[in-house]
Length: 354
Image (tube, rainbow, N blue to C red):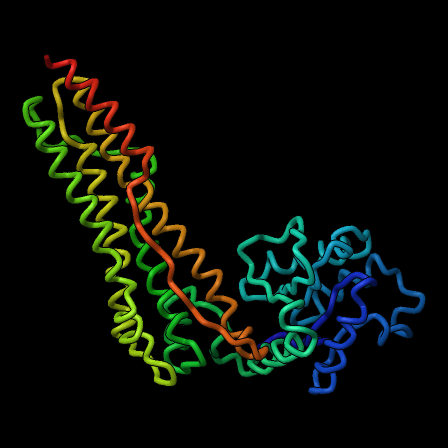
């Protein structure tokens, strides 16, 4: 049975931001939801020990907490008390509870950077109010699964997303599909980070340079060919032309290809590191060559999580009336530092065999 709350939302904010917050509260209240807002609760607060009363509001009595983050909010002792209570609840609850709204560029201590914000200065009070109402409107008392507004974190949520297909569902499914596959090979990534490789094929000194040239060609070819994964043609076939729905299979396929490129660079570097050699100089050449994979692997990985952070905001921003264009700007390259390191190692090797 779902927990019964006294308030749909509790707002936490600094007094300097009251005008903005009050406009939001008025619109959400007019939509029929109950909000804990200090000015509306003056009689209830009268005589209470506030250091006990406020934590109970944020930790137990409200379905969601909307935090209006600003430089004023970060500086106030009372908002610090409220923030701590909100974070305690957010830490203990597996489903989203904290709904932060950014009123300026303040970075708030204790609030993870990976939590999705809405931009209050861009959306305005009405946009934030619409987003809150949409969030509340998707909460059901019967406990049945419904789309929660975010990129799925598991297969069940992905099934709900595909079943309901809210606006821009295609981009959320694409994000889920990429990260799901990346996390399936996380152990490979950890081995890659520690430069681990099982010993493999023996390579004689005379074969080091030809081998290196072949492997370099592979690395550059893989980097050049990656652009087809996120090409305009792929995006239209997967996400649909403007006004047309996307295709589930066409979304999942390029996500798999994206991760296959990521995995191929990891496997390539592992293979290079695994070659057995008879000299330290030859080993150093191959170790330096394996670093060609560093930039592609880290860029593909970081982009996947950066994109999820963006995709987590898409639905709420659409509900708030914002026009959104999703663009994929990702290019793979071999870093100049890796190339220079390899050339130095190769030069040292060449001197050692003369």
